[in-house]
Amino acid sequence: MEQLIQQLKSQQNLPDEALQILIAHEGDDAPLFAAADEVRKERYGIDVFLRGLIEFTNICKNDCYYCGIRRSNAQAERYRLTPEEILSSCENGYQMGFRTFVLQGGEDPYYTDDAVCSLVEQIKAKYPDCAVTLSIGEKPRSSYQAYFDAGADRYLLRHETASNAHYRKLHPPELRLANRKRCLYDLKDIGFQVGAGFMVGSPGQTTRELIADLRFLQELKPDMIGIGPFIPHHQTPFAHEKQGTLELTLRMLSILRLMFPYALLPATTALGTISPIGRELGLKAGANVMMPNLTPIRAKKHYDLYDNKICMDEEAAKCHVCLEGRVRTSGYRVVSDRGDVRR
Ligand code: 5AD
Ligand code: FES
Image 1: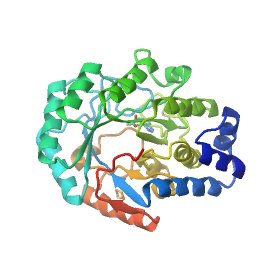
Image 2 (image 1 turned 180 degrees about the vertical axis):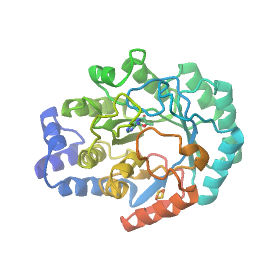
Image 3 (image 1 turned 30 degrees about the horizontal axis):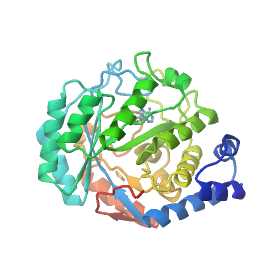
Image 4 (image 1 turned 180 degrees about the horizontal axis):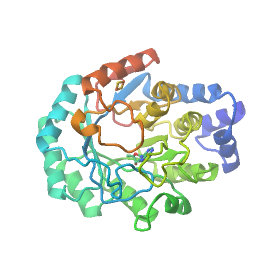
């Protein structure tokens, strides 16, 4: 095991059979975490970057089988933030030291390209020292270009799974892995810093699918890689599926750190949801980003992607204090910085 870890660390790559062993490893993962932490510290020191997440709409035209805000969930209480609410969330975050704002939402046709561009322009005008990240799904290339021209810096779009057959199990027929990939390559080509990623332990996922994810990421070379455990939502077709495990998610984080030393890797809210110390363990396994929520409470309660999501009733300021403490006691420090990738 130790030999495989050292090989992955020095070469950032391994044959499938060796990756398979690392991914499926049962037993003490401390040596893997330690190697990942070493690589992370060489590149990023003990810095942890914060992204202020603004979940500005939970209305979505898509129907992904895993997601609580899928269009078929008639019980979801739908909301949209007004531009004023979005801007005041940014102001709140700026005061707390955030230098990246992530506008995330369902694929909500109400927000036309012009509306998105106008939001981006207003935020960039008011906070020229901040990065603006969009996470609003699959769009034509021309839309992405318009967002970029309006000043957006980054775009998050998880590929969810790089296996076609597995993609079919997670999504209705109108959604295609090929289009997802097209979006990611367009975004990169336009000049965005790009984030991809996948859920760990989603229904039907095996080690083989995880290796396909790693191979796809080697090809795409995204700046950020967001992973978190799959967690069932009770009003979806996957209500009774098993959730992804803490152990596998942490191992995947470490493997990603070793394969992509430069990458921005968030310790995600989903990881914090399956274990009270999930995010701390994520940091120690190689993660270097956290994405606290700036969405006003009245809305964020309804951004319900999976069951038991944490921090649904906490003010942003409370989460900020809480997170700083968690980062510090894990041996890292929160920095007030855009947190650009270090290639
Ligand atoms: N469990 C965990 N993660 C989920 N996501 C959506 N639904 C779930 C779920 N049930 C993730 C997807 C999406 C991101 C915004 O949230 O990977 O890209
Ligand atoms: Fe929200 Fe701890 S991060 S309460």
